[in-house]
Image (tube, rainbow, N blue to C red; front, side):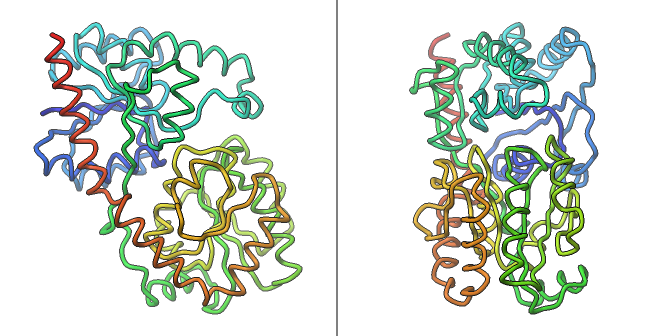
Length: 381
């Protein structure tokens, strides 16, 4: 089977990382993987693509119609059995190109899109969000089947895009435990030394794009409250620029304990070095960062929203309402002061990761999904 994955870029976000983590498992299950990107990126994941020996094809054209034509011609040349699109530009372009090339297409529902929070926080304005929603809604019938990264995303997007529930299959995204590595004491010490942070310094970590979605501004507000109780604590913020960069930089200004690291390639090392992860997202699809935290036995304080509740399950980690820095500060303080009592939660988290969220489990789920889609398509024909 040949599956052509179409993604906007290989910038190194959750969708792209998940694709590269699951690709070796797909290949081991007899699936040929080709990756097509539609926009220029920073080359963050290029070395991983090369290491995995994956075929990557770049299509870069600012004209939407010419981009559709270029992708259609590529599909006719490569003749994949299935096209798999992820993220907005790829969804719209891929659906149109696959239709004209008579190739079945599946689309990943990766987030809870088009809600009131998107209209409120979008830098392009509410009407642009409505227009994009309309375009997605109109082209949705061109997709044969949908893959959702969580049950909550499946439920929400089924309603917002008017997709019958039976056309959606939930397969959790996975992470490669080999790539993440073991959470050893030596790794913790080495990473802290490289950051000039003492071994006993209380360390809070924030990971994610500097977007309104991720609530990094809430983490910084909470951390300033935390400093009144634990004045020697340090906050590391790792994430590429986003629509809240200016706000976050303003909130961090004048507080030397807050370090804005920018985009990092060593997030697993940072997780091994940290004492607790702050993840107060306003909305999410699944929470890939939480998956990595569970795999690396890192304490978590996250937003009490359905996708994150679904991700961490009954591990016992603290959940707080979004946009509540005081509550977040209280739980972060508790995690820092009672870390030695959290070993049972860490054990639960690691077992949950190994049961549900490994790259191998995701590969099994996606390979079965692809086979079912092709079987249904051929049966209809």
